[in-house]
Image (cartoon, rainbow, N blue to C red; front, top):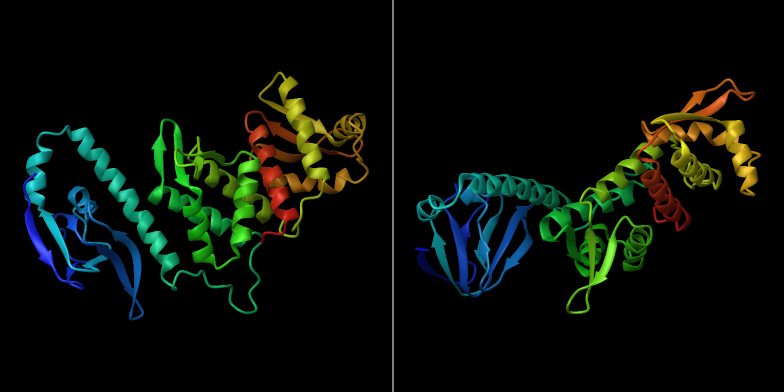
Length: 333
């Protein structure tokens, strides 16, 4: 591909945030840094070593530069202009160009959201004095940040979305200022309960993966819904996961897509499984926090209490509840 070669001295600016797009740059020698300015300080977003490229998103979406780039040392670069790239694109199917444009837009949004987190020197500020943090708010922020990092630094291998565990650990520790042990424990819990998978790569380094890329966001949505409906529950009473286990078994035998279970039926099934059921009536309202899949309902039984269940998501909710219970037991928030 044709291009224009340039030599840069250390500190020379390639482009600034807000500049019009003029193409991409290949690093032939030296290093470039991607940064933005916040409160008179420079926040480094990435380092582009020899052989790397920068500014490639602008080739597809033609949007103004979202960050600034300069040479961190003497460097040599090749500038691929929009015109140069346009000549190449005439040989590539339009659907591929459209795909790359969509992906560049998503990556740009991801970078913008991460910059907000990193703007305060890489640490998420604590809640203002006198303002109570929402239950598990910090844990939720960690999971949302993990999802962003997966988009930015992850890769796809077949059906799996992979990212180095060390990348997640280092970034979360830096951004949130929590002890590394806390971040490691969160990842261990997510892996042990199947929200994330864990394996060794060819270099024997631990890699995290998701077969379902929405796994983290689905779990975060569950935590948000449950805590909003049960704001006083900082820990998960054993009765709730016990009832969930019974619902999973009942669902497997239920002939219809929806079914209703009375409190009395649940207590009979629980007693048969040697569970203590005396206070289960107190926890039926807590199932309001399970979205549309499980809802408290009135029944014709003696207590008048029961649960209306829609089949299909019970097993996923049971797994999410098990993860949430472990988080509460270890007091990660």
